[in-house]
Length: 432
Image 1: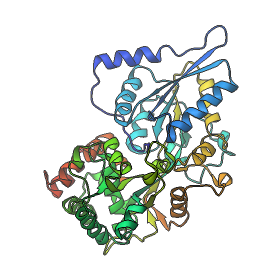
Image 2: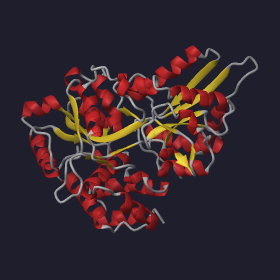
Image 3: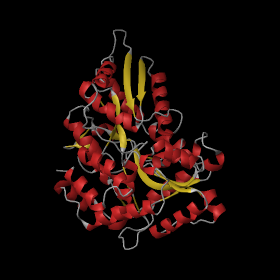
């Protein structure tokens, strides 16, 4: 997710100035009399030198070299700014190719608004998509987008720091909380958490719930449809999250600190762990990160929880972010051509693997060279060895009002501002 993984069409009203600006950008997309075409790409990957942003830019550059009549203009914003502007564009005119998420909280409302073009699923029969990965991008059997990633949630950790201090990777959740005390005692932040944005903590809560239940699909579906989150599993998972914050696993001020702040704590060696998705696996190849940290980044998945039904090999994983084409693009044929070019197996999937960018929604086995980072292979092993996967995180399983509620209230329940029962009541009301 960046990934980022998880998003929503915000329901809040937009400032008039924002709408005007967005409208003026979209109106310039056109094909002129000379045959020159300008494509507008709206992306949630602002870092164009590392990770998925680098991969996206490499493909764009390749396409323009091979299609000299095409100019591709990129507007790339970070997650929260992207969400806001996407809403404005949906009302004033969408750029030609956009980042999307194949999850109900995002896609249902987008498709209801009719802003995305239908794609011909048969065109992708030979693109190597993993079985089931397209399903989240469909409505009524019609395909409206393509997935980019197979996302896996995990605890990134500094292996050298662990070895130097004699710390062991926890196999059980109680061991994780005990480890937090040991790390704190050494004057180091145990785990860097992006609590300010809400969605990473909501994924963490989902991860806990999955380890408790072994399969939360039914109880989440029922809770969202009825607005009733009184199932004991929700209360237990939320109580564990609160206990985790109380135990000092997260950094001071976690509930107001954003993605970049949390990540920097880890990459600068100030935190021993960082909870985030597999889309950040490229940290192991990012030369902006000090070598002593970069070469020692490893990952483990959520430990088992006493009394829980989830096994060690049950992992929080899903198909999240991807791309789509605007239904009203003035150059729709070229936009779909570019989208299809992106997903040719030797482009997005290959470039992503070679640059250590998590795992694709397409088969990447033919690109394994033996030169992969240890971090890459840990994610591969986690997926290949998974007994079950969680599917869509809880915060993305309902309407946008529910997503907004859970992501805005989760800080308050974790820091004790509201009670667990109040939290569950609030998110239930948001579903009604």
